Length: 239
Ligand SMILES: [Fe+2]
Image 1 (cartoon, protein in one colour):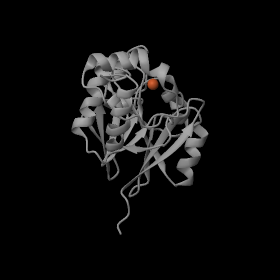
Image 2: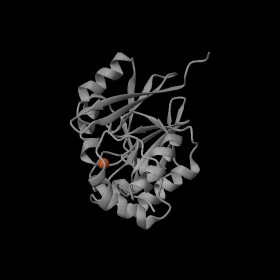
Image 3: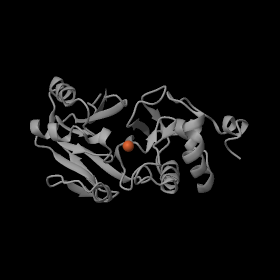
Image 4: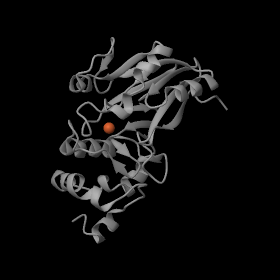
């Protein structure tokens, strides 16, 4: 059997159950760190234990709990920072020569190709990173949940359209790697999310917005488990 080209390693770090990911290119031993935060020593230890060289930093979005390790990490490894242009403009933070992208851009990490998807809703320039049939989703899509839309820059209408696009355009066997460990499982497939993620059940923007902004946080607690369309109808959460 040929060796796997890319391996995604997850580290759960910090008080908010953030997932920091190391994307390993097995051919060149290069690695990209997704959302470096909280415990940079742990990230570096993990890279060293796997004999990986940190070459890139990929940001899903600019919230503090996803970026608070950037500077410390850069002191150890001169990595290239990637994020979407609309997120950089929204953030209005100075980074040293970041690589600003548009949705659909591809980033090369040795033999690994990473596609950037623009998935606004949690923030204006939120990104997901796709490597073959794996998707690192930041705070856009959680396992059986989705990111808040009531924070600065959040927009539930955009989130509705983002999730609809994901449902319609991505393969159902896509494996989801979320930005926080808020669920009963650390990963899932898109098919499982279409079946059991309450935010995937809405047909119209208005009812999605009402549920996201006013109902969800009062009716569900993490760790999130599946909630089917039928269960939501019984609970009168879906018409
Ligand atoms: Fe966030």
